[in-house]
Amino acid sequence: MLNQPKVLVVDEDKNILSAFEDFLRKEHCNLIAASCIEEAIIRLEQYQIDLLIMNVNLEKKHNVTQLKFAKELQQNFPVIIITGYTDIIEEKKARDYGFDYFLPKPLDLKKLRTAVRKCLQLDKVF
Image (tube, rainbow, N blue to C red; front, side, top):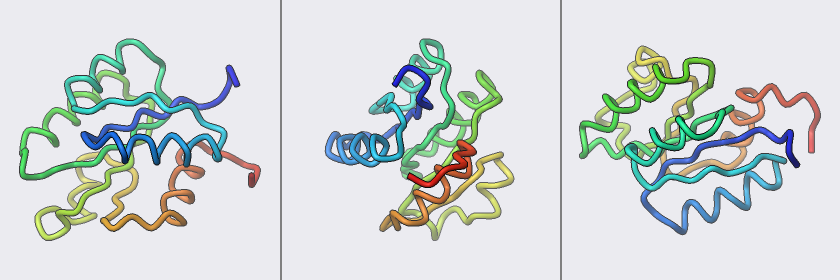
């Protein structure tokens, strides 16, 4: 358990964070949870993160700017963006920001699993 990848998930909904905990446990990963980008930046300073998964609420336009700052703090981790605002930001724009995956809501768990495994370079299928 000590060598399991650490995945920082940022979402303000505690039920979503709980669902991610179950999902990531099945993927043999440890959840590091944050309910806002400010808390996520603190977690980035506390832990060596292997993957960042963030629900981006684009009504709060500062989220993308702060996320870019967070990525600069620790440049070696991949980022998966989840959003319900696909009419405001498209996948190409997300990739221009340096995000590795862009997953629209409602979330397809199969696509999420594939993205997590590719980002973490998990060779074996669990």
